[in-house]
Image (cartoon, rainbow, N blue to C red; front, side, top):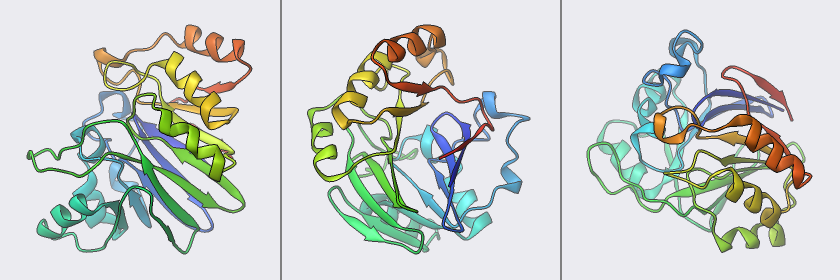
Length: 227
């Protein structure tokens, strides 16, 4: 199982012979230009946490290019169907589904959600991926929330992908608190540095996590992490 960072909150997870892309925002990400080739991306599944443009800007074109199944809220599923993307799997908070690569659990994220054209996109979400004997939590855009305390009552996480950029989501200090709440010691950062609003002091963030004996990885775009 390996995870490749494509910038912002977009990752490629390769597991059980399948390729999963989370929240595709590539071509409009200045930091990913000349690093990630959108035209060469392949995916079997695209997982969408919520409807904001910095998570869905490349969704329709990527779905057409790859023929991937889009896993998302009911509202995004319906919106995509209207746009001609019919290979979708709708879910909602608290639900789970067994796919050919493993199980996807859709969990709560404390955030707003609307699509670029203003359409309501349902409740913002995160995902817990259960595959190859491991569990990975993709938090999506979220604030620190007490609901996170429920996660370790059901899931023993191996890795968690958490936003650290502040302003629109929790900052790195709240992300560290979240890591303790979900009882996960291996954290991979996302939703940072893409815009002026979410620039992060990497050294301070790494030092804060180290102080709490939690491993934080702040990935470089195109960096691949073996899980």
